[in-house]
Length: 185
Image 1 (spheres, rainbow, N blue to C red):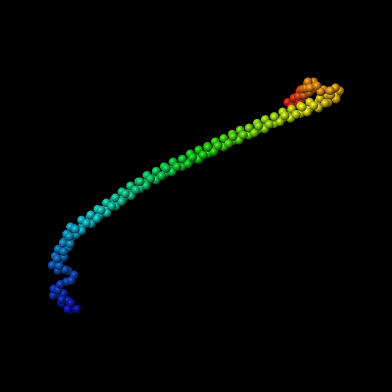
Image 2: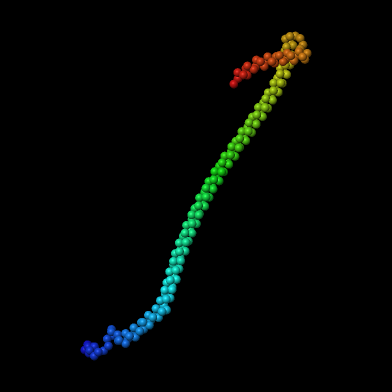
């Protein structure tokens, strides 16, 4: 321990405190390094920083433009979708109206066909009735002539007489049957 104190007392250099020459050399090296960095590295850093800032700002601007374009596209899409829905509704309404019109036309056509069939049936019935009435008149006329000739006892073979008798009988028969038919519902 004694040696340590002696060495400290002799003026030996303290390792914690640097020598003045080292301070000057370190300061010159530091200033030289600072000059080189300031001359070459700092402008490059600033240039890179400016480029990145521009890219970021350009990216933000592009993103905003893309977002605005996306918004316009979305609005256009919504507009087209609304138009398509309106068009679909119009087409559905037109189809319903057309279907209703076709249905009404088919009903009218069916009614016309039904009326034609009924009319034709009534016409056939009237024709058959007239034919049956004519056959019955002829048959009834023959039977009436036969019966009248038996009752009268004379022959009613004469055509003119027979027709007159038959016509009178049928007229009387029609006159008595007409009030009965008008009373029917």
